[in-house]
Amino acid sequence: MSLKIQIRLGVLLMLGLLLGLGSYVILTIHRLETETPSVQQTNALAAQRAVYLFLLISTLLGIVLMVRLPRLVTRPLTRLTADVERVAAPGPITRVAVTRNNEVGHVAAAVNRVLRQAEDERRATLAELITQRNRTDSLVRGLDEGLLLIDQHGLIVLANPVACLLLGQPAKALLDQPAAEVAKQNEMLREWLRTLDAPTAGPAPTPGSPEASRAAGPVFVVRPHGENLHYQLTVSEVTELNEELKTAVPAGHVFCLRDVSAFKNLDQVKSEFLATISHELKTPLASINLSLMLMQDERLDAARRQEIAGGIRGETQRLLGMVGQLIEVSRLDAGKEIRLNLAPVPLPEVVRYATETVRAQLTDKDLQLAVHLAEPLPPALADEEKTTWVLINLLSNAIRYSPHGAALTIKVVPWGEMVQLSVEDQGPGIAKEYHHRIFQRFGGVLGPAGQQRGSSGLGLSISREFITAQGGQLWVESQPGAGSCFIFTLPAAG
Image 1 (cartoon, one colour):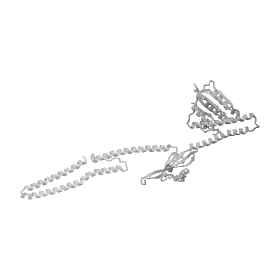
Image 2 (cartoon, one colour):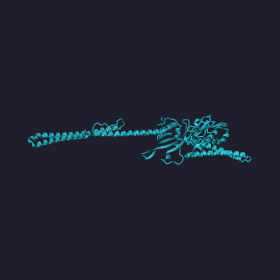
Image 3 (cartoon, helix red, strand yellow):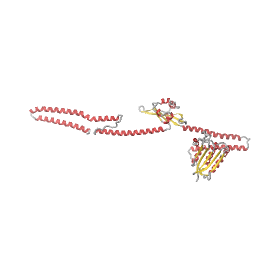
Image 4 (cartoon, rainbow, N blue to C red):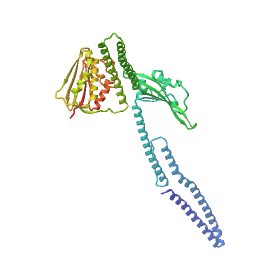
């Protein structure tokens, strides 16, 4: 039964009782008026009693209604309020009890529906927050940069694996710990924290600008795996909005360590290249200068002058070749494609021209050159000029690193649908771990111990790009003390 019907029935019952008693009183008074005087005295007392009874019953009904009716209305609401407060309080209760099928029960059912919707939204929001947190955590952990976050109270609240590796401590020994206390036993962290107190050069940056919240620190060298790694420290200030002051206030600092080892290595390679190329240029220039001084001597005969002129011509060709390599490198770095003129090329002619070009160098070191050409040998589909340049470069390297009086071997054989050409020497050899490096720009040709051998480090890099552009491959087979064999392949014509 609904609350509305209960109230109506209570009021209706009260009205019925009042109407009944009122009717009885009216009827009694009417009888008194119509009866004889002798009887009126007898019934007057009965009428008086009826009136008193009417007043008493009316008073009692009024008191009952005053007490019962508010309690009837407020008791379910009070119980519903208590249930809602229990649901709102921390605990396992998540529903309001529905005890009766009345208006209060309908309100309780509606509250339960709202609670279910709120719980569903809370679960969805919580799942989204967990997903975002996992993504952020995976992103932070996957960074190849060190990341350390210190809040405004000086506590370490985040340290990714790279930062833990650099500091040499696990994350559990860093998180929620005062940075100043950890720095007492950690020299690396002390160096990081010093950057916060270091004065900045130049004019003070504008507050809120990127320069104000981001300052580059020194470069640290660490050896986590036995190799030198260089990390550039960058400090960023974290701010948050103060609702009362309506302004940004400091909330901590982020220490970011970027791996700049590649740039350091590039600087080192550049320095080595400049030193090597300077040496390479200085040697022929000094030889040319000395030869020119000798030619100024009037006592020299014509034959000796021709010999000196030939030496000058050779050194000049060497300089031109080196400059040509630098030009090719600049073209390739500029993104220009290698221009090829592909046509069937007879490799015996390429070998003959290349060997004639380096004949003077072979004679100077008394090297024995053996050429093995397979029969029949198909022509190669290649650019004749660039293929010849590659072979001359390989022969020049072999001559440079071969001992006096050693043997060189050139072999040209069919290799499936390709043609294979190899240059083998009896030099010091190259360790396996350097086979890939020697084909990098400025890598140079290395000796058995990996030391630089006085090459510009450009010839093999350009040679590989020339061969790869023609659809072939260039590699080396070598080991220390057993010489080297440089091999490249080209597609066979037809």
